[in-house]
Length: 143
Image 1: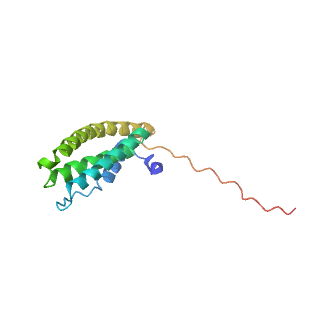
Image 2: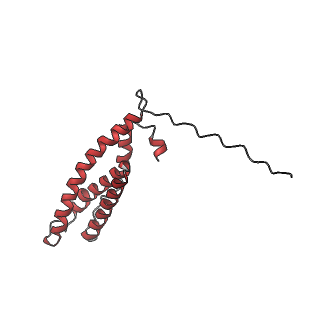
Image 3: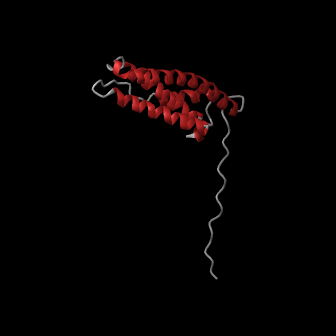
């Protein structure tokens, strides 16, 4: 996906990444244990951390947005969210979400600058070099 992304401005890239992060299902099923939702959110956060450590800002941005959406729109709406039994998870994930939102804001600026800088200064697009010509096909030897 990087090949087509090279032709995008920073604003366009952020819009494309936001569209990817919107794939989180925000329907709350109260019959599903809130621990399952916390586990899923934890996996999203862990994957975002891996992408950050690898320097993959775009994928980290998407995973952090998915994590934040999962927490804010699903977990926080679950019937068991405010029960005493899950307060440890609630506070842990609330802190993680706050940190994730700050990192999302930071990454948005980094990604926007990165893609605007790659542009040619006029339209925000870059020229992608044409693929190298393939070598001529080898002819079988008749010796």
